[in-house]
Picture (cartoon, rainbow, N blue to C red):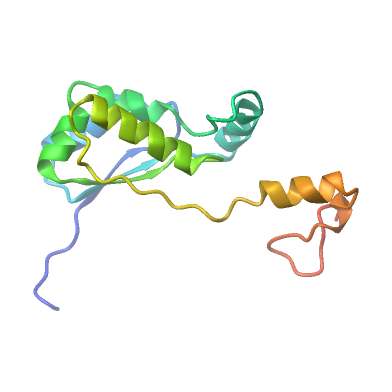
Length: 150
């Protein structure tokens, strides 16, 4: 043992349609160091893909903003320093980052740090293969020697 205490983590969601009160409840009833929010089931990603075709600036789970706006959840989180780990960027994690920053700035919380993780989106690679008529040659990402038609 190092003498350091365990990190206390709460979870406020398991899907995009979960109630808006859990983030606030966890932030106010703590004590927590971090709150995890998981908004992406496989069906959510499919819905975000359809949405992104029509509205390229979207493609992320917008339900998070309902949770941040519930009562004064965003303000409580900023005041307490609770970290939020949010899995809702779907096909546009930067878009979620940008919209979150805009929401926080509108609440006078522009100094709150917001980061995003990007890099595993292979949409452009698949589309390029399809455009070149080689979609069947696009390799499976998890199974060596297999392509998308297998």
